Image (cartoon, rainbow, N blue to C red; front, side, top):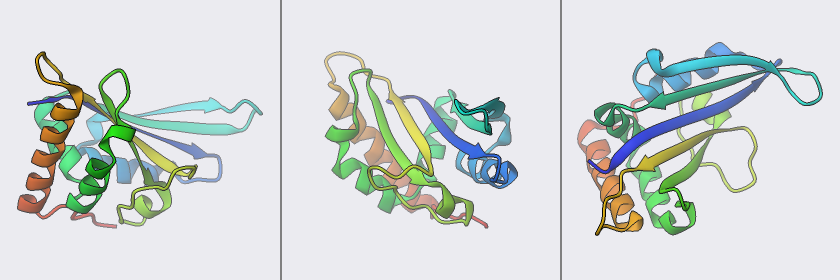
Length: 154
């Protein structure tokens, strides 16, 4: 079980309907108990909502990772070295507008309207973080195929 946690984060401006974003995040997590909404102000004083979810239960985190689907997981795995940081976290982003419409699309570098995903890996010697990431994402791909993910309802 090489996953420690899964974290999702999105920002909603005053013009966004945060309930739609929360519904998409709920689907990603599998449960709205993980979702928190922080209402705050931006640097310029505009109202924003920070919508986040931390899944620390390993079984739930593995299932939630698989929910993004085999194709997206394969794209992430293909660039795993570029997505892995020094703290054993794999980073990726999903397009917020597409997710809100019931589609899962990996965001391109530089896109700003995104849901940030961060997978914290559980790495023990003698394994290396890249090996653990490959195992985790390989298992997630198998689970996504077996479970038929994504099955998002818009």
